[in-house]
Image (cartoon, rainbow, N blue to C red; front, side, top):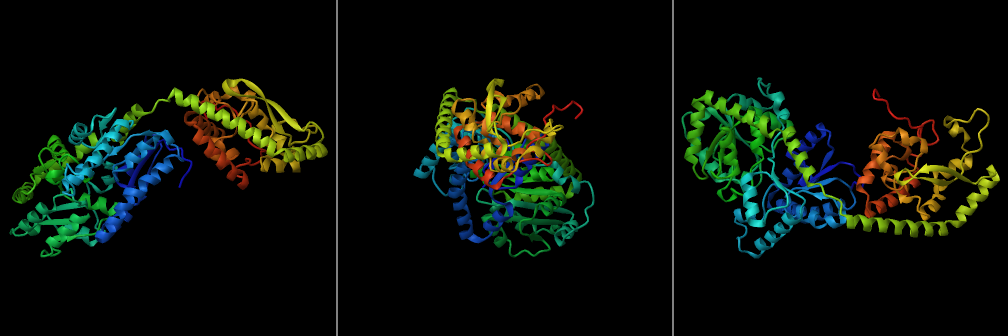
Length: 601
């Protein structure tokens, strides 16, 4: 578990990869740091979903119960600006919204699937069942208390709001796809890298179903349409590829067992490269949605197909988000569920009208690039998340300040009392080896740039002639002084500064007065809080960091300070000191002199 993180956004889902990973990449290209926190890698999840009923149930129970609890616990120990929990699993947003009082971070759930709506659509429960009512109440809580909600379809959003209430902020951002992922394979004749690709290239047209085929998808209409198609005289001109996983995929395979591999190819779910190449070889992407699922989801595979310049042949309700997307951009055809005859007719029409099919394929690609490409969606995400940022609660800030001072006073007083023998022993040692003074005293800037006198144990001997500059500090450190620095014992007298209120146990380290005029306005924000004995920068590299990195960590702490964060830093400091991490930079006692960067640097 990663306890310290500076990514601004964490997207949480039980399965990583896919649109979330591509969104994170687009955030990075826009200069916004983000990460995906997932329980399973895509390949691991596909393997578990293909391991039979018992394997699927075990994986889903683990993701449903264990992962939300782990994520809530981790949120209390890891700091981001914003948490984006998906509804995969559906209890994940609830866990992070309910625990927000402890982690204090902005929570913006991403609704991929609606529950209990999806369970009702699958026939697993009824709308008036107790479990349905309970899940509905949980949705009402999440909608009411989340900082914002993102839906992936307008129809889904309207249904959810009508049933569970309107969130304080909400928007619709489609799952989208990354056009660049398919660009290397489009507009050219690909050299086949597998038997499957050679087979696809031997066909006049290729229709494929790629991805999950779960309980929300209409596999029955697909079976009837495929069976009817291969009764035609010209059937061999069309190659059908099913690269799917999930319960529907297994049923589809069983139902098509009478067909041979010259007609239809069933393949295991593919890796990213093979998946992208298959879609690039696909002329028609088959996508299905059960009638009961019209308001609960929109298959994300739709946008990948559009990015691969495939026409969409969707078996879906006319009033679903999937159907409305296709109709809006003229990028395919929508067939009502159960109408296998219409599916066959459409395939036959496109077979004999290749120019029209090419126009539709181009429309799909253009719509994706103009509206649903990941960089464009990243901009929409960034704008909405900025709107959802939590404003600091003045009452909580006052409470945190009081708790911080209470911790400072009690811990520093107890520390000074407990460490009195060590302090006395060091004082005697310094008096014997270096004489007086025992303490190093120097003015340093405190909160709001107000100067105070910093106290530390002396670690350097007096300079000899020619050793007056800071570049000679390393040579002046005595053997005892080096030990005191390595163990951080030289810092113990600063507990007196903490006790009298000049400093805090945790905060940006107090630097030199002459640095004040060298800071940028952003760097100077480090003085908005009291300086500390240890701090966030010390947890992320100590003196081994560059000045710019240290200041960035200091400002991050200013924006995210809390009692919980202080406790975490104090605990982690012990480990840093014991491991003696980042004590100094090469050829310097601690850090080289800080000079402001010129505009050309």
